[in-house]
Image 1 (cartoon, one colour):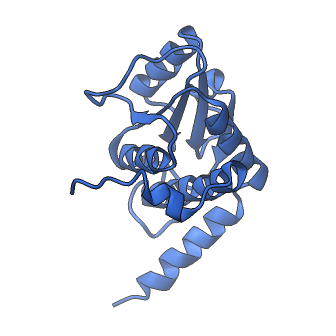
Image 2 (cartoon, rainbow, N blue to C red):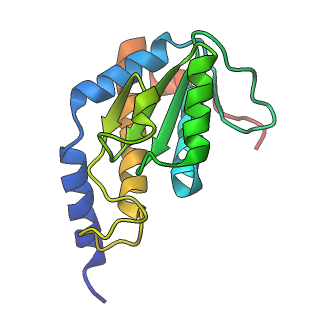
Amino acid sequence: MKDYKNAVLKELKESMECVKEEEIVWLAQEIASARQVFCDGLGRSGLVMKAFAMRLGQMGIRSVSVGEVTAPAFGPGDLLVIGSASGSSAVLKYHAQKAKELGGRVALVTSKESSPLTEFAAGSVLVKAQDKDAMGTSIQPMGALFEQSAQLVCDMTVLELMDQLQLTSEEMRKHHANIE
């Protein structure tokens, strides 16, 4: 077997070294000041964003995944956080446009500095990784490196939020599901 473990870890390290700390701080501030946080994405990136919404809820932050049957109405003061490597999905572009029309803000976790989604975003956390359609240098298929990096960006944002809100893991456990 090839040394996949070290190759993947090397790719993740290189990807994460390019993430700017000030972008993580900015995203955490946007989340902390939002009335509600809506997390969105498609495919595996969407699963990362669902996990992020869950973790934000465990922090006591009102959060939901777009499209869930229990999702409340979006409105002024709300934040839509989209995870998309390419930033080119028509569905996500529609969601971002709608969020802006409804008086909310949009934040991106993306690998593209400029994309159809960036025109609606107040800001982005930029991740160095190829999207699913790019022929890059990653040994991993399609958008795997972006999806993994996006998860780490979300986890780093949680740590920054814990600092900003002075939350501990023990306090977060109080919000963890207890009917399992």
